[in-house]
Image (cartoon, rainbow, N blue to C red; front, top):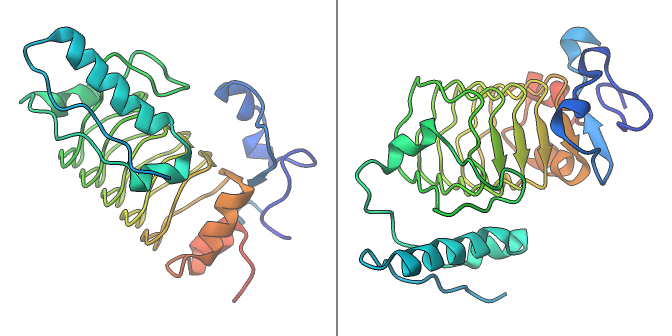
Length: 233
């Protein structure tokens, strides 16, 4: 099919060397969007325990267990209350310093409903972060790593996610319109109800299941559809 192929057999010229910058080789087939421009059961989370550091750590680890559960279980999980720390939104500018690959940290990165419109979050690790309903519109997020992040209903419209790693991110009902996914790695993500109108995926490495989801999304039309390599409807 024009515009995409199996990563093992062919890689677009501009994507050569990209997988090597992202750690180990993919464990399953990927599609590469060559770009036409270049040819169970609910889980309980412990309540807040402000006065006991040990219980706070247990609560964070329990929340991490939700994120580490099978991907389709997250939708049925009971999320913890929003972190009461008045500076919690500022933690996005630091990101997670632990557990980049497995989304484990000593403190839950709770960015729900935070606003980062037009800010610069390039190179940050937001793995395991709760970013539901957060506003990342027109935000610079190039080279961001998001592993098992929960982004339901978040706004990424116009954001720059070039070279990002989006592994098992839940984008359910998210606004991804006109977002830039150039050379991004996308695997195991969820796009149900997401708005992808005008999004670009040039040279993105897309997992097979993600490719199927994207092509079935009714907002993937026109140039976006060509970028991904979907069949013409």
